[in-house]
Amino acid sequence: MDTHWCQANRKIISYTTRREKLFKNFIEINLVEDSAGNRLVGKVKTTQDFYLTLASLAGTSFGTRDDTLIFLDEIQQYPELLTLLKFLRKEGRFRYVASGSLLGITLKKSTSIPLGSIEIVRMYQLDFEEFLIANSINSTVLEYLRECLITERSPISSIHERLLDLFKKYLLVGGMPDAVHEFLESQNIVKIRDIQNAIHELYELDAGKYDEEHRLKIKRIYEMIPSNMENKKKRLFFNAIEGKKARASNFLEEIDYLTNSGISLEVQSNTDPTFPLIQSSRKIS
Image 1 (cartoon, rainbow, N blue to C red):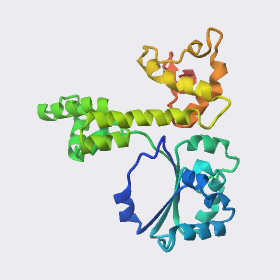
Image 2 (image 1 turned 45 degrees about the horizontal axis):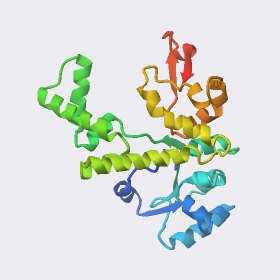
Image 3 (image 1 turned 180 degrees about the vertical axis):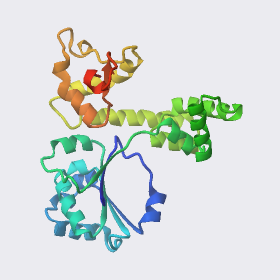
Image 4 (image 1 turned 90 degrees about the vertical axis):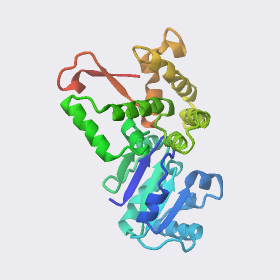
């Protein structure tokens, strides 16, 4: 498939080198900036309108389908473009990638999703293995560690000590690519904390940005996540939001919003771990 949707909590991937290897021409259109400005893309109704607008924005910096990538950033700003992507792909003039920080919400509310015309890719923070790769731990070492795990034997001390050191740093840095990038560049924990705080604040803004009716509850639930994670039961106590009479059923829409937006992850508990697990699982937050 040539059309991709990328849902990310924030735009967190740097792919400059990669894209230049694959595509001679790269055109990025930030739809938030467009909506705050002259709304050139917002006025597009047909594929012909899109090509004309693209020409006005990019000039001559695009070629053919084989060498041109069009990146539509924050596509949730114009949900109608989701449908237009189907026809753009069918005409096959260029290749497309569309991303959105809250794309899960947009997809859920959209009445016309071009199924079969797109590939959905969800973006998450770096896990520990990816953090190791970013810190120049190569595939040979990773394969060696897998073999140690399978055969239940300890790795050699030098590798073990190196990985323990990186694991401690991973606990401090986390997996958000901007923070990892800063760690690789400077290893300055103050700068890394600034980035982490900025990301946290942006998440908080997103948490109540798109739903006026429920924004206060959404914001409150989001603020409670760190303390809930420290709790042994790791679950949300609804009476902490609206008093003793609060019930889980009163917050289904808010929790659904946080989950579908990618801001939080759904976790299911299971008190009777029998196969199949889904049969005896229940949702918690």
